[in-house]
Image (cartoon, rainbow, N blue to C red):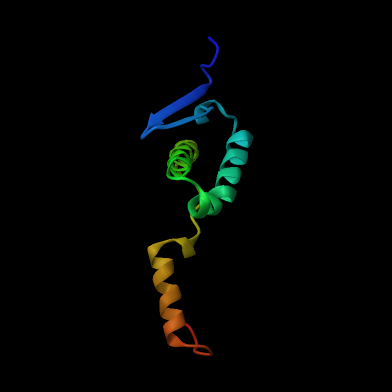
Length: 101
């Protein structure tokens, strides 16, 4: 059936189409994620409300698919709450202060 590999979202007068993230292979999904993250800042600063809404929707679809495929992805220790607390503690200690032994 034509068009079955496309997803359409209509909300708040916004119409967006794109390939259903579940139908993308891993390489295509990563390319889509890289592209949407690359354009995020410009869309936030200069896009219309409709463009920002469409961007949010598409980013959520793509990121959701990535997380579905990689539920046990490697998480960098510095990207956790504990890692953030360690950075704060180290910066509060000041330069030249020895860290925990």
